[in-house]
Amino acid sequence: GCGLIYYSRYFQRRDGVPDPPYASVLGGPRGDLGYLAYAIFYGDNRTFAVIIMAPPWDRDFRALRHPQGHLRVARLLPGVAAWIDPDVAVPVTPVLPFGQVTNTLRQYVTRAGPVAPGLQPVGDALCHTNPSFAFGASMALHHGFTLADLLAVAADHHDLARRFDTAVGEDIHLRYRAVAAEDRDRARWWGGEPIDVTDPAASL
Image 1 (tube, rainbow, N blue to C red):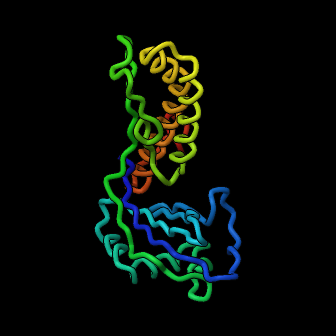
Image 2 (image 1 turned 90 degrees about the vertical axis):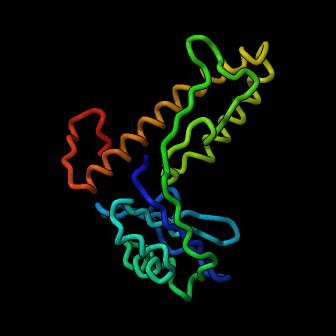
């Protein structure tokens, strides 16, 4: 489990309004306050999502599901107020809660061979990680192009499955372990537990 409930709301920039300044390579501002995290993600047609991530055990944050509560908190987050100023952008959706988010890694090739020859999951269907890391789209594109290349050389479904697992297996395992470790350590940190930063398995 990612240990988060997402509260997302989409906004649209008004015509002719440029993006406010930001420092994140993924788009708008993002951060972790030690009890709450947030991020802004771009959409198309001048839209963007303001995402506030709260721990599921803190029920007070359930107020974020209401538009006024979400807006009130968003205005207090570092760097976010300039994005949702009424002169800059308008909300275009209600608040969209998203819970029970999990990191999931599926294994379709074992020592005995492929378990489902002819079926080749890619992207989130093969490895799903915390969406705030934004791995999903790039990973799905990588898997799709890799699969297309291997279809041209694979002898049969069994060979294709083995080749694909060899081509992407190490990458998805590394992504899964890194994100799962960070989610685990963040949950400990937010819960007031100590984190040993000298531990190679620690992510903070």
